[in-house]
View 1 (cartoon, one colour):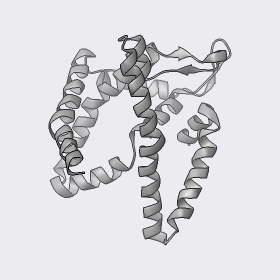
View 2 (tube, rainbow, N blue to C red):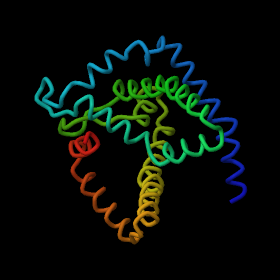
View 3 (tube, rainbow, N blue to C red):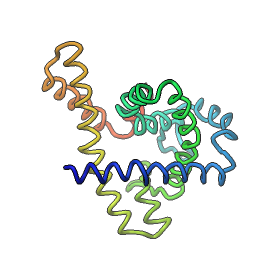
Length: 209
């Protein structure tokens, strides 16, 4: 366990932070700071409502796509992490979190753009599939890395992220209201299943709400 903690400290202290900030600055420069230039366009697109595509296929609205994107990026880390940063670094930490968020949004823009460029239609023409695994495979031609990413992200989202979020919910309700953690976990599981089994349309509507 100590060995894993040491690797984690090295990755997050020296490697990942530098790479993430470096990519954020690079993408900001290469896109001519798209996060500032396209603010008006972003507001216009988010005002669109869900409807029908040109060929009659259903699609999610721009705001629903935005809501899904936010749901996949914002979690307990953003809540507990902000509180921890302020406690350790003081109020000035808020400025640097804002600064990194604004610069880093260029990376999010590039990720989303690549996902749109290299997405593929689903069987039967009902929507599309896309994401990092697809642009690793179809854009860079790295089938092995695409497969590794797909496996790791499936495990991460299917087990790790869900465990962290549901555990936090159950702990919070247990401390605040004395709710039984097993009962809370079961309720969260049923509700999450009801949303996921409804497909992308239901996921979009719930995240929008």
